Amino acid sequence: MRPHRTVVAVLGALALVTALPTSASAANGTLHYVNVNGDDFSTDNPVNGECFLLVSGAVHVDNGTDTTATVFADHGCEDPLGPPLAPHTARDFGAPVPHSVMFN
Figure 1 (tube, rainbow, N blue to C red):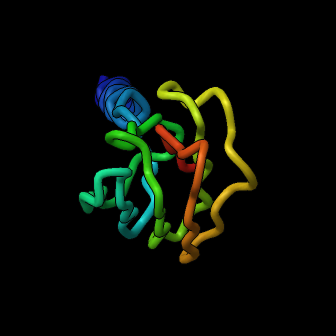
Figure 2: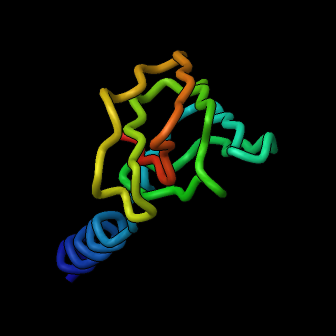
């Protein structure tokens, strides 16, 4: 009877461990940007694969994270605007300006 209880306990513990949700990965660092009105904004440790809006559009984006960032001309991260921003790089934008960003 005892070996049966041990097996049940081990299987129960295994089921609990495998059922735990996995945490979403995030870029480490901060994305800073200046919008078309000259206002400064930042986002710390943004979640990879999530679309972030750039309020009023950005004229300067500084990717201070350890992850590549792709900026988009639209608000829904569907129309890429130029090549992606490598980690720890910055870029100025004229017309059109990016309105959203996603980390890969």
